[in-house]
Length: 452
RNA sequence: GACCCGUUCGUCUAGCGGUUAGGACUCCGCCCUUUCACGGCGGCAACACGGGUUCGAGUCCCGUACGGGUCGCCA
Image 1 (spheres, rainbow, N blue to C red):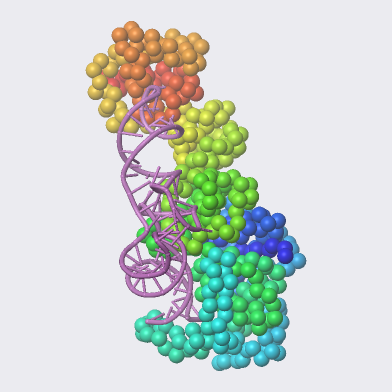
Image 2 (cartoon, rainbow, N blue to C red):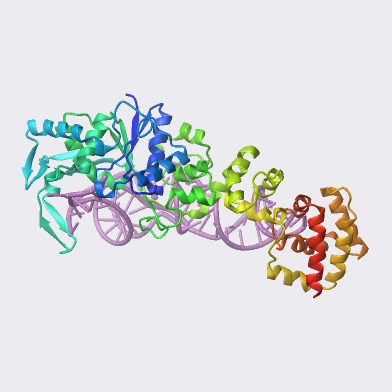
C-alpha cells in the first residue's frame, strides 16, 4: 500500500506548535516511507475562513520545510484541496448514504444513523479502543445545567443551510484523497469511531490511525496562542532555525530509543516511525527548545550561518554585507542560542557610539590606579602598527608590565572601555574588528570619563 | 456526569520480569579561561498509590488517585 498522509489545517491565521508538530509527524512519516504528503484546507466554516489566515499557515509550513506534494499551489489529482470547493463531491457521497438509507432529515439538517454496536479503533499508538456510539450518544453532557440530558445519537452531517460538518467531510476527503495513514492529535481519538462508522457506511476502507499525545504548558494546561513558544512565526522572528524547531517538536512525543537528541532533517526522516511515538502527553519546555536551537547553530556551516543571520543583523541596524560579518559570527556562534542574540554581541565593533553599562563602568572606575592603567593601555595600543591579535596582546601585556601588573588586570578595564560591558565575546578579536582608531579613541574617552 | 487515553527525576525520555533504574534540558560545584559563554568532570533529582500474579515487578492484571481528552447543526 502506498503511503499517503495529510495535514488538514483550518485557516485560522497562525500556525500553532501543536498543528505544526502534527504536520511534521505526517510529513516525516510520508517521507520515511517514500509516500505522499497532502495538504488540505478545512475551510468549511465560512465565518473563520480567510485568505490571509491561510497564507500565514502556508508560510509557517514552508519555513519549516514541510513541503506538500499535493495541495494549494502544488497541484495533485485529488483536488480541489479546499473543502469549500468540494461541495459537489460531498453531495455525491451524501447521495450514496441516502440510497443505502443511512441518513434522514431532521429539522432541515441531515443525520447519519449511527449503528448500535461496538466499534473498535485499532490505533497504532493507543491500541484498540472500543465504543458503542449509539449508547454513548444517547446522552449528552449539558455544560450549563451540569447534568446529562437525553440526546439524539445520530450524527448531523449537513446543516440546514446545506453546509457540511467536519466528521463527514473529513471522511469523504480521506477516501477521495486515498489517505492511508491519519496521524492526528489525541483529541480526535474519541471521534474516530464516528469516522469508522462513516467509512463503513460508505463502503470504504478506513485509513490506519495513529493518535499522538498532546503538547501542554508546563502547568498542564492547553497551550494557547499567547503562551511562549506557541506560534511558529515567533520562532522565525526570534532567530530559531527551522531544523531546530522540527527537531524539538519531534522530541515532544517521539523518541529514537537511543540517546540521540539532535537530528538533522534528513536524520529525522530516516529515523522517524510510528513505533517511536509515546502515549503520554508532554509539557512544552522552552529552555530545552533553546538548547536544541543552540546545538543546531553550532553545527551550521559558516556560509549557511551567515545567510541565516544576515536578516537579524539588518534588523539590528548593522550592515549584513560588512566583510567582518564572518569573523563576527565565528566569535558569537557558540555563545548565542538564537540568531537574534548575535548582532547585539558584536555591535560595539560595528557602530560608532556604544552604550556603557553603568554597573560595568562603576566596577572599573572604582579600581585603584585605574587612571594610570587606562593611560598605559592607550599608549601601548597607540604604538601598535600591525593591528592584529598577536600585536594587540603583546601591547596590552607590555603596558601591564610597565606598571608591574599582570595582563589579566588590564583586560577588564580594556573590555569595559571598548565594549561597554564586563562580558561578551573574546576581547582581542573584537578589538581587531573594531579597528585601531576606534579602540584607541574609546580607551582615551573612557579614561576621561573615569577621571571626571 | 458518562465514556476514552495516559501516569519513570521539575521537564523531555530510555526501559518492554532479574539494571547500582540510563541519557538529555534546567540547577549546583570543580576545571579550562582575559570576562561571559562553549567545552570537560562531578553532583542533586524519578518508577502516583493500594492490592494481586510471580522465586522475583518500573515492566503483567485489578482497583484508587491524579492529569488529559470526547460527549455541538466547531474543526
